[in-house]
Image (cartoon, rainbow, N blue to C red; front, side, top):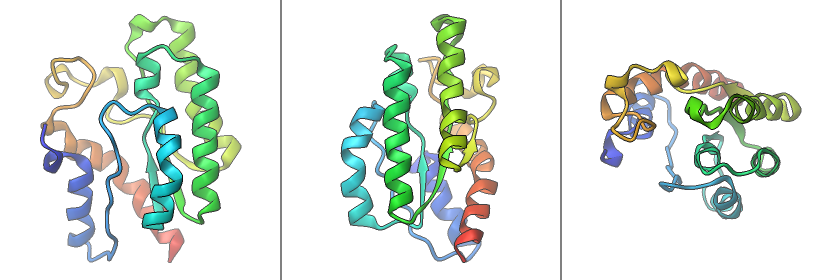
Length: 169
């Protein structure tokens, strides 16, 4: 999938259409883990000084079976850094395929909710319908959404972004 097809690019267009004067900066890196995100985040916050950060990380950690405690610690630290920068934050939860076992997948999915409560940040529990997303919207890897799903992802995220931006005004 081309970067231009993704929901982040679609978000930029929607902001323009709604005459909201915000610049969208996509600092995502394919295959990124929370550890890598935590290393890169301070510089990104300093460089871009965002009003809002959409934190959508952790899926690759879960797919690699990283310890829940490590993922939790990294995401908790990232939310702290964002809050200290005075930016609003939207934490996007992740789900894992069921073959990771009930105990791990439940703990993984719950960690996002726990962080949202602990840090008092807005959360979108998961994009699309999580594991119930129709197969025709998922790439052959069984994990990543196709270009056709990107506008649906934006539709899931948009109300949260609107609400957070309204809080900034």
